[in-house]
Length: 294
Ligand code: UTP
Image 1 (cartoon, protein in one colour):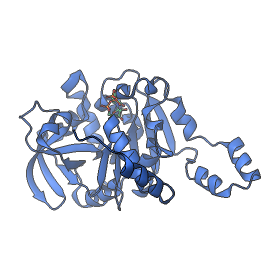
Image 2 (tube, helix red, strand yellow):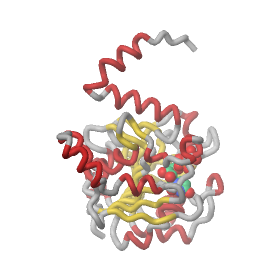
Image 3 (tube, helix red, strand yellow):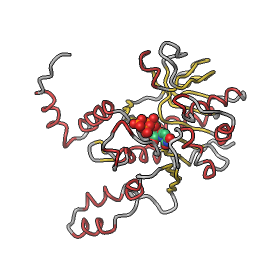
Image 4 (cartoon, rainbow, N blue to C red):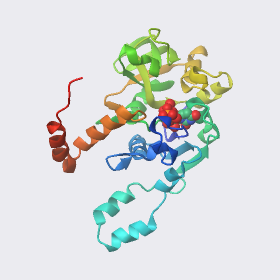
């Protein structure tokens, strides 16, 4: 099977309950870090990695996402006639080519694995990426690009991996490691949200994957997993049962869990401090905060 990865699935059908009431009408992926929606960071990362086909698995109430990627001819005309060429250029970086983007619905929120399986017919017979826009990763070389390069050598199935503290393992998929070679770990088992104290390691799965269509066939062989949901981790772990390779890739970069409020706020501060026009004012504000010790 070829190892060039040109398709990516963006599962964005979750309910986003941790951000209610905002997510009652605003998809989580449209919420902004400084001035760019979470989904824009994910798209930029995918493009940098060579992705050409973008498949969104959405649900009711997510039409703002489709609008975001549509052309905005009136807005472009207004910016053009008022000479705001910098903003016009910025706006155009968000346009997607017709035919490059597909939307399909997951009718019920049955889990991340189920959302990914909904896109099976659009994948065909080639490896594909899965990107969770909640996980925003700041890196010199974008995370998915690091993985695509490693995948060209390894093949198999590959998941992004990161060390977490032992208390946090029960919130993640966790890898059981057979061997380690630099950033690449060979995986011998995977468990989704292990009970506290039972995780096989502290290496957690983060929301970037490179998978083969065979993983999609595994959904027929697995049952509901942690939280009563159809888990992507379980479908990937099934590859091991069938004697195929699974790798973890310990990416370089800073990951923010923007699916949680604390992670979203940390990312907001970090990305704002990274912007020339905001850094001084925000840093001065943060310095003068007299935070009580906890
Ligand atoms: P989360 O576990 O963060 O769930 O999903 P959520 O619904 O988005 O948010 P909370 O926990 O209620 O606040 C991780 C990723 O999987 C997608 C989500 O959209 C998110 O990108 N997902 C999850 C689906 O597409 N479908 C599902 O049924 C579940």
